[in-house]
Image 1 (cartoon, rainbow over the protein chains, first blue to last red):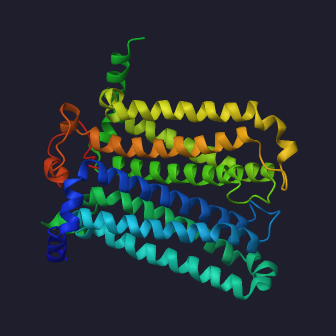
Image 2: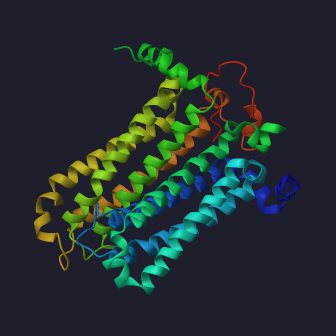
Length: 173
Length: 200
């Protein structure tokens, strides 16, 4: 992975971004933060609806149809800006424990979001009448929110990967 | 009061020293700060997009605002606490940083923006609370301004991280400097850094 990162850092797109570092990196990171903010807002609203703490004047289906597309769209923005950040600083991103743990949680968060939206579409009545009232589903809503919060923490820890000590590739160099 | 002595008192407190000396506290404060601001922006955007007629246009504005804005305020409180703690660790440098000042100005503008909303469109909300009534032009202007201001808060906040390191405080970094190398990442924690290893 270190070799791949070093190879990537010598490619033309990476060199271009490295030259434009002073403005490009803060700009891309800012768009990335706006993206995760839209994800957090959307996930929060769907989860609060499942918990019955907000939007109780709407059905779960209505709430999910309102926020689901924003969640999906924001994830694409995050993917695009995330790829740009990896291209700009391959070693900084790819040779860290935080980045890979973050990618695992991103996969979990995205799969849960996709599975939930598909399941809701197929069995909307069952979700509205029964599932949304189940403690296990309410717990899943809280866990999902925490997964996205952890993704933010790990994203920030990429810059401080040494906090992982021996778990960080940088810590053993 | 003398601002310089206040700043150096803040930096000299035991709490500030504790955060500076820990390898974990500053990164964690920063992480919680980002969670808070993501929720602030994410929830405010929902309300602003409703005012702009982009999303949730069918839903009662008052119902929506009362559902959402309490979370916005809670998240904002989290960012204020974590932001203040980060500020304490290196108060004089943050205070002198142009982007920090710009961010504070933008936060004040965001507050003024809310106040203007309450004094104008907020007073007539019963007339445009539900579709088919659309929010008045002043509400839409305020919503657009709000989105722009909060994006500005995020951008300036991000740049603060790049411009408040010890080296950057003396002179701006050339574009091609490897920040991590410059800051001795990782593990040169032998002495107490004047700034946390906040590289970006």
